[in-house]
Length: 207
Length: 302
Length: 123
Ligand SMILES: C[S@@+](CC[C@H](N)C(=O)[O-])C[C@H]1O[C@@H](n2cnc3c(N)ncnc32)[C@H](O)[C@@H]1O
Image 1 (cartoon, rainbow over the protein chains, first blue to last red):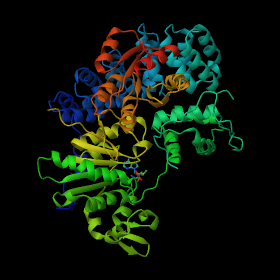
Image 2: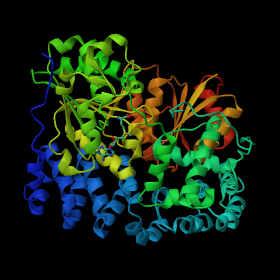
Image 3: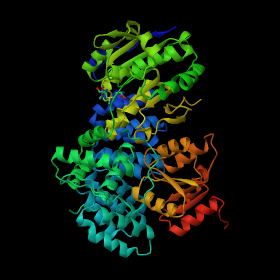
Image 4: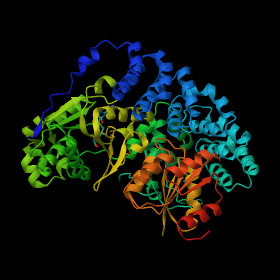
């Protein structure tokens, strides 16, 4: 027995040449009993723009986290309005892990998320508004600061504001100064808000 | 200098370093440093404490200049909002050391022979070879180190077949790896008897002996390309050091999902010493062995 | 000196809790999600964990469940949530929390609860 040279790296080039599997077939494979088959179907569906609805449907009932992760990655790549709507639904789920996975996915989709952001930040459920702020954390979009300023100016909930101030410490400019000061006054009895606002004020990009 | 997960510094608000590193016109303030430090930590998992301030500032200034962004403010905005993530990658490159040499991070090879392989062998129900994938292989130091380590330190090598597959995206570097010619610097951590046993002296340095060169398979793979990785299955251990840290969030997640399907259930992933699965994926079990922390694809539910 | 691990994805929250705890002479380390927290807990002993619920990659419940399943000396954990949902509270205890607090936590309250769980103070 010893170190041996591999015999079984499959002829990869050959497989790449194979005709792309049809989208309908892949969609039906999303329901296969073997999780490996479901993972591969979810992964390959990235080439099927019309697959978002089926993926979202599967996501809601998928019990295997490894399949779920791949579905979310594919939805992120598709990034169309149907995918976004599906991800927004996930934010309302009771399942913490699924919610956080959806937040991470949406962070990658600035252009698709932007049109729905306003609605999310105005949702009656404060938890959902916090998740919306969490999406802004890593979102590459020029409006991030504007959204955050609106939140700290208007949101009545201390933890929604608390999450927004945290991010303003990273992306805030002088435009946020007055709002941060007003926020401090509004929650004068909350040591955390005072602390966070002062920290953000000290870090504003001003010069 | 190498960034690590060292415990964060003890520092207090208002007690930032007061010194101003004299760096021409571009100035990184204490608040800038803190802001950057938190951002970089969130993105890469690398934590710089206050004692690294000079090191970090110097590199930031270098990138501010190289990108023509003019100030820390302009540069940080680019870093934070650039959709491609290219600048973060360039900066990460600058902030981390990237040398590869024989027996680098040796504790991980010890972990392989003393902890991982015994567990793998124990679980194995057939006599099929044990499969190890080293990606990226770079110029070959890492996969050859694994081979040498197995031959030198693992008694099981007499009972089991082991396949080592080493992959990289760069064909030139693969050619170099196949040739196996190394500088003195690259072999300096090898014990002399190991050097004598597995290397030949050449005019340009030391060359890996033919037997070893024959026993590692080098292949070209782009880890981010589904078609490239599809055939890679049934591995027991994957070494992926110092690559994911340069990937953006999505590529990193995709790569760890790829590894999931490339591994046998119960198989292990070893990352570089400044990398953590905490920035990539929750699919793996965090396993602590005496030598290292390793990530395991869960065994199939019974 | 007692060691406390703060697990939260928000940098400001980590810093806020760090300030409070360090002023009271605790040693503090931080992690920004459940996986990193687990890695740190496996490498170093902590006397107490201060854990947020919603975090990327591995949330607070997941972290506590994993932690409680490890062959380690077990330390008390405080779970900190943003909402007063009774459901969260029940789930926190089920996952292995010893105490459940609502954000934002006032400094005195945090210190009192921490000391109580560490057996330094009796309620
Ligand atoms: C930073 S080195 C790591 C080498 C070694 N593992 C070490 O720890 O020093 C990066 C290597 O990754 C390779 N690489 C970069 N992108 C890759 C990709 N997408 N797939 C495979 N290899 C890649 C490069 O060609 C280079 O050889």
